[in-house]
Image (cartoon, rainbow, N blue to C red; front, side, top):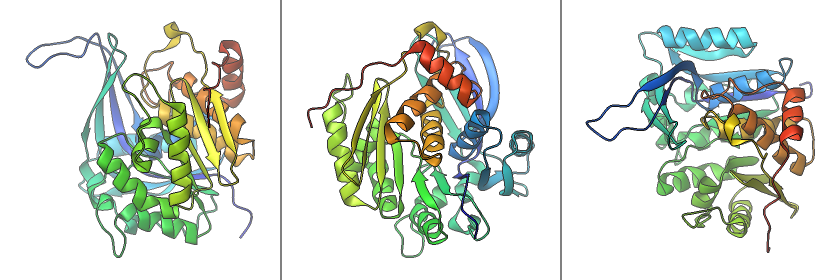
Length: 343
């Protein structure tokens, strides 16, 4: 086979119904919706469209399932418009596409997601076939959002492990996108996947949950605890690069013992419309630079740059722009100091 190139995004495909509120309401009260937006969502969708917005010529392929309803047609149309290869994005006859109602509070800056799984509950390892893909890396997610994949499959504790193993056997590098849920669930899914991962690019809570290390003190991220968690991740699995991002910066470690710490982009507060999709955008930026063989610290900085551009819009991917424009904005806004490490 010719040298592999591009990224295969797989797993969660849903529609995000983004709703901006003045304030998140208490029960039995009302709050005004000030803005509505419909976009693709989920790890498969967000990564695919982020990469294509960064570089329209970059090869992106996807796998997953959607319903044959209007939401499914909407997602298929988005793929075709962006140039995402979607031969293996199957439409399930009579099925309803997964959707998420995403509420962004202007008062608090926080977001709340209400998720309807639809056909996503039926996604299984049987829906993944890596025999013909020429992509270099599989970006897979989201554990906790797919009932069948979340359960045991064959001799594996989860279907996620089955799919990741099959991808590695087919010659792909692998990365897992996680969803912030309970600490116990994140650890369970993470430990199941670790033996079959080449990269793990997640947030500070998720890295701490998988490694069983408290990386937050309730107020802020604890950089030295992030380092402790990264070391444990490298000890527990086959990961060659593990990275954790958080609002102030990002820290990564590789299997050669390299430790990398960078500050996030100092984006002006008045430029921020919402943080929905910022984690996916960080992963897209990091993986794009990783794919192009940039140094790890540069990949971390570019990940934060892409995350910053994404926060200019309420929806997950609309704010992401070209590589050149992303670099220009990051230079204009500047970077925060890198987190100080004692380790």
